[in-house]
Image 1 (spheres, rainbow, N blue to C red):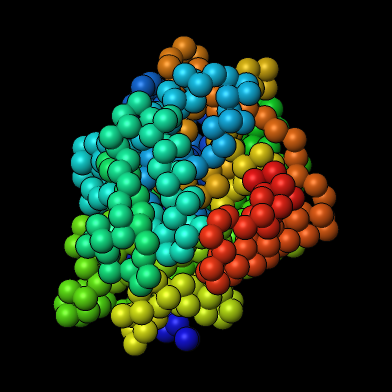
Image 2: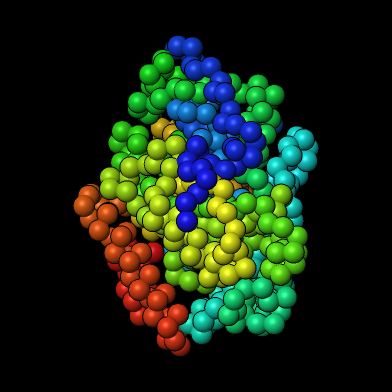
Length: 461
């Protein structure tokens, strides 16, 4: 099915009426206390908390396009506070108690983002909801049960997660062939572009200049060099997430993984009565090549997934435009889960990139010798995780010894990704195996396909 509109950054900006007019670029050489590269959620949250903690601090942000150009303005709107990284990998350099504390801190981001949005008057269509993961075959149901128990065993509040049988799941959302699912309580839905625009405005009100249309050409100790001039600063924060590979010297630091979405036309009331979804839950499934969806403010459905997962050399998209094959794939996922939507128009399709470290685990840190910091590699959980990054980086920059600066992701470094063509071959092999595994499970395989484990082993997922 053709989408009425493809690209133009994302539907979320179309919902706002237009892509924002960029702020003025860097006016030349300047000095600051803290220079932040990237005006997405991570950079903006960091600037916000730094200025709240120390108003006299000179904080500046430089951005290649405009605030929210990347994943912050294109994501699925899941303010989840989730934790989908390997707990076992974090335990190796920490402890079980440390990982539980990190998981609890991530979960707490939901309340914190809502608190700031309320305090700053940011209207981002925020709605508190549950997160529902569904299973539509026996193998998926096996994984749903395992994941539900895993979350329970690591969570400081085991009642936050609840297993559902087929009937209870269908009562929430009328998913075709659903066999069960689980919900995680205490999450939220947002309109991501509204959140990032509001956060940028809040940072500006605190006195943080955001220099847009300013391309960073190099980052070094004490300086950020751009095509508009140089920022000299004692502390430099790299907050570039999926665009990190475009910075000289960082080509293999994080892999730029693609994710795409489609959004339907507003659905009529009779169709919503058939579908249900009255709780506006965040919706995902237990497939290996999983999807993510939400019911929007005005009654549309967004459906997202990996599509073409990786472009050779960590190349990024052109203004969010995605391939027709990806649109078709996402439409198939939508109509397979919700056949009631088969006649619905697709109004918009788009894509973006997210950052993936070599061990698929997010990280935040500040090198005390160079005063160069970083945060990201969220692997799809950036809406909430970026808030914790911002608070943690603020503490690290200010030299505060807090509970946040002791979490297992702090100053975590992993080896770089392999050079091409090995990155491309590895990622595409992994997702091809995932799709074959999903096909076998859908055809009746009663347990998780061994091909999925092989896929994970290829890239260390």
